[in-house]
Image (tube, rainbow, N blue to C red; front, side):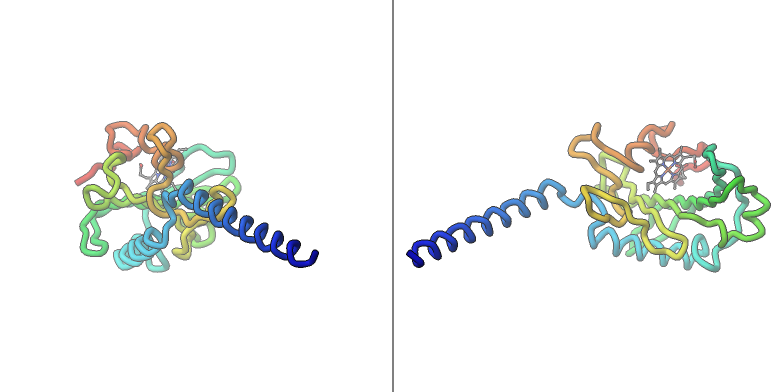
Length: 198
Ligand code: HEC
């Protein structure tokens, strides 16, 4: 009696194991890691290092003129900067947006103590042709003030905010940075008309 039971158990186990593997595989292919891959994270790190060196971000960043940005309930103050920088041997245009946050925050308060109110840094960097031809080859990244990447939830998992944020299976399923910025005037994915590609 014992043997057939053990045999059946082994079969069930084998079957369950195979099913689990199949499930995991299909999950992985479904997600097809559209952004936040180790490669994206590494690239974002290098981009940050270059921006810090150029004093566009980080502790030694040049002070820019803050202004009142998108009307949000708690008051957002922004600083925007752009330049041509070289990352991993590729020369590209970069736009850096610093987001300052605080209750009824004023420009004067930000100017007095930037570090205190800096909430996040949004960056778009023009990569080599072919990186993402459908969406103008922009590399997107959202950083915390210390240069760590911001994290977001995607299908129950935490994803570092770097790369093609966020490609859908088809263009109409695009989300996030790409989705929003594709509607910017001029077709260059840049909202501020005074910022133009070189
Ligand atoms: C809900 C729409 C929306 C989403 C999502 C969005 N943006 Fe923006 N972004 C804007 C708008 C509108 C502006 C211009 C006004 C402002 O700065 O608030 C802007 C401005 C910018 C700028 C300054 C250059 C420009 O386009 O004028 C950068 C850089 C930027 N966003 C990066 C990002 C990144 C990186 C993400 C994703 C992590 C992102 N944005 C997601 C709407 C969006």
